[in-house]
Length: 474
Ligand code: ADP
Image (cartoon, rainbow, N blue to C red; front, side):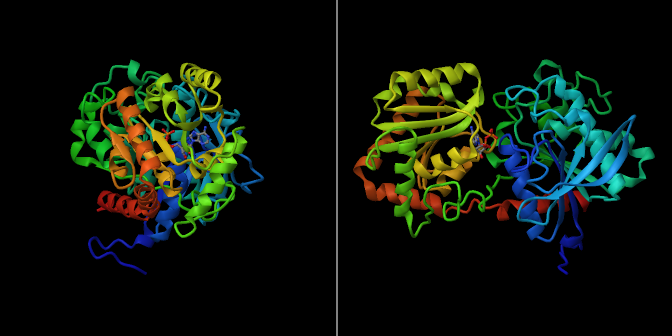
């Protein structure tokens, strides 16, 4: 049994409940799910008792994940919930799933593009249900780790319920902001005053703000974003509230699930490869070109992009001028019509240059990471960003805007970075990259290899989270 000398807490007695709206692969929409699917596995390797709790959405495949009913008819106010359980695949990390009519729908979020008022009640209910589930399980976590607005009401409920709530006497809270832009349906329309603590939970509450105000420690998903959100430009109207919590605000870079995203073992790609067999990456490029209906051409640079097509992601920086560049583009994503249409128009006009696939497709995403030479991440803001890290792991060289986690992970050794959010800057940077790709193959190979050598595993970040948990329970 390991004893940590600094505070006498044994890691293997530390109980952490991680609560969120998504967990990959059981219920994934985006990066939030990826974090919740990977962090607890890394924590359990550090001998923590880490468990996950999410809603039991209608879309979840109960057979595939061997989900079992463990508790029935737990009271949540007037309502009753059932609790189900499985493990995160390839781990012993328990995942609890809360069953209630609120979560029966096929979609995880009512609207994939914006926080929907229909979800307010659903996630407020989730916050209550999380606490009642813990009581029913008789699981008293040292820390409840909340993630984004969907679970942000929990610290407030703990505060307001405390007198009559012996059960959570020792429980502390960490609130992680994965994306400050999504503040809950009331979100940015609602004026937020600092010190709204104890506010009645009604539709007009800004849940993001409540999470920031009421939790023990606040963290976000990269050191640069932690600094950026204290400014008006990136603070999404909460910068003043965040400034008040500046001394309890930390930035911990996300990792990626290096088992799931592993070119050497990935079953979704055409041919596996590693640093030692990097030449096999080419098979994936040829196969992707074929799948796109293009002739196989090993020489032309293939440029990939996998993302949500939304304002944050800087899609409008891809202009018609990009058709003049000597490369092929494969874009995969879904999102706002205006971006989907703009990209589809390019594909229609320049079918030999652009392929645009409007869908969520895990296999194709992996094929693009493996098959592309260059990967685009032109975000307007980016709390952490996972796609640039995944791309590097697959030997695809990122071109990213210098913001948030992109700034913390992409540099001249592994890729290209541009500062100003402008189509011309992005274009020039891609052109510069293509010049190196075509004219300096050795330098290009070095970039590729440097990227593949980076350690994007969760091990390092999990240790940082452990430090925060210990800070909370000191
Ligand atoms: P965000 O969380 O803002 O969507 P991230 O870069 O943090 O962005 O994470 C995005 C994750 O979702 C990555 O794993 C990426 O591969 C995946 N992804 C995004 N869009 C698609 C899509 N259309 N099909 C498959 N995977 C996608």
